Image 1 (cartoon, rainbow, N blue to C red):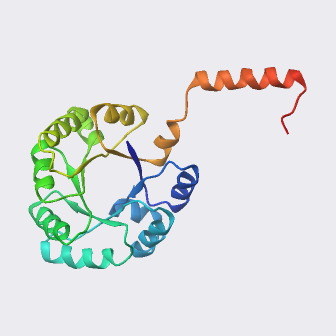
Image 2: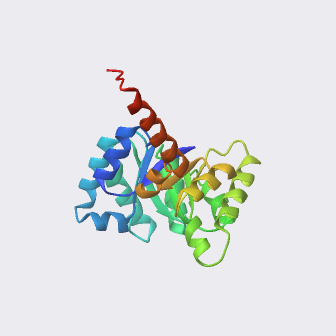
Image 3: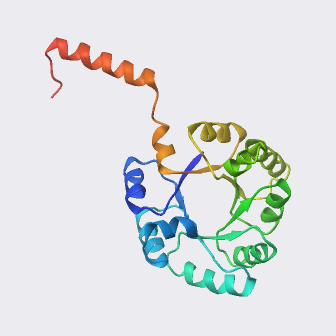
Length: 218
């Protein structure tokens, strides 16, 4: 499974990139707004940090303006993936951009039918939102399973299932079990994947036993 971090915080991105965990980045207007910096500057800096896809989202609701915004975003760097909403105009934009060789991430997907439309339009990524479905008492993970199953029926489809709205490590593991190609995860949740109390306990015991020997490897 690929790991994308869902943030516009360049410090978080650099830390994860240094560890070697990062395959890409997803942003959205809300995350960019939290940075307090100009949108294009933030995307450009992120693209300089990571080699993988960096999703930059259009903000217009109509096809014509989406295409104009996409043209600006594509000029930032070769690894920009244009993020469009799951609407009629968004899918139309996806089709035009993907036909032109651009990676597109279709976001705000909440049904398998929507995911099928995105794949038909040539999306590189489709982003089903797990946590937001869980929030309204629906099973977000079952949506991942449904999309993976449908895509498997059609080997010619190249769209990757990008599990989004991840709330914690369990979501990441479950998405991997369901066959998602990518999880886009808040930085905090990615770091939490390291944690287990038995790892901490075992390491403490090893360190204590080693200290008793009075030895040093260096």
